[in-house]
Image 1: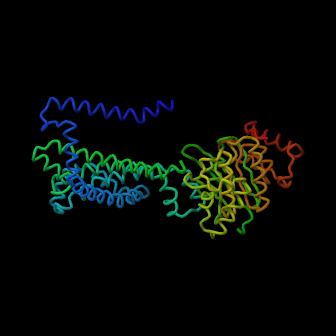
Image 2 (image 1 turned 90 degrees about the vertical axis):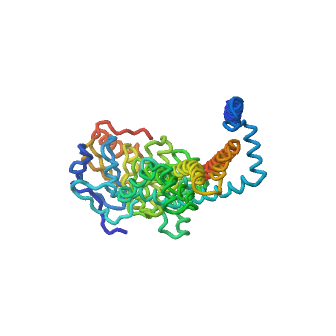
Image 3 (image 1 turned 45 degrees about the vertical axis):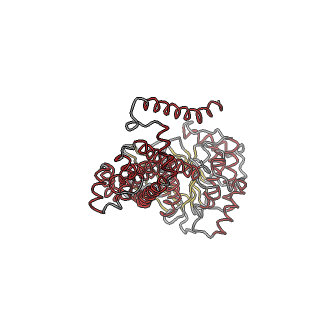
Length: 250
Length: 246
């Protein structure tokens, strides 16, 4: 039983990856490398970007923009989510706005940001506005799922409102908040690359724009892999943090 | 301490939707005593506690003697915060006290309930009975004038039930304050109550009130007047209350 679960945990994903690479290699055999580069060509491009320092140089800028926009969204979205979740008036006032933010297409934000704030700050702004509703909505969901019996208990023992928020609501909202952060991080790397592609000449998105202009499809694939790795690493980091927060008492 | 010497319900009516739970419900008992409310399941006993705790308001009628009282409570479920340790769960309701006073109270009640060695553990490691004992510690430690016990031993086995009944009696003797104890077990009521209010099925009215003057901890259930009380209560409830614990 234990062996079988170990197999599922480690070997199944490994064989899945091998299968994917095999299918990719197979397909690339039918096309020109400009259309579908092989895994080996992609790896060579990735290696050359890494050795040349471009991967780090451009990646650093992308990460800085992504984390800045994401961080601002967390700072603004968490208290706003609490406010909307706890206060009916705030819910009436802000919830429609959150829904509107959620449905506005990324490309609209991109074009509007170019007009409103100039090209340099577009990636940060776009990450902020696209991740903000995810964080707010997950925080609200966490608040709605709080155990009412615990709130009643705190009420009977006359525990102050702020302590109830900090010590009863917050620990129960954390898993929802982390789910929101995970979704927001996924969006962050997509949004920042898209924004960089259209608005600036530095960063992974800008690197992708140059690769596309030069028909360097293998480099385009390499940049894409960089974003995938970044997304996976940050997602893993977040999962570890989430487990660390709740493992002790769960 | 509160100067009012009685708590009571005065012609209270309470409905939830179309269901009338309390129908001209009245009683008055002296403070500083243990009042047991016994009645069939679902008769509205928890509603009476919620009204006393101020969590519900009566439709008509009034509740006297509870204004400005500091109320403590043990619910049917332990209602512990799973992300706080045993000590922190008690400390959570004691924030108005100084740190040293808090620590003294926590230590005293955890030792009394045999939970002191678990003070730094999380509730997940405690059994159902231990969790309920922790809820009792929390309720006793909280500075209160009125303690509400809502069938706190409902899901516990017989020996543990008996032990906790004795512990509640012991804690009351140490510090006699008003306790309203809801149960559907006749023997729990006879062992703990200075007053036993026998309630009817919904809509709830008081069928009878027994006053038991024998001291707590010295009551022998096999001796009169307890068998007579038992039969009387059982007859009034039409055999609907249960006594499984002893």
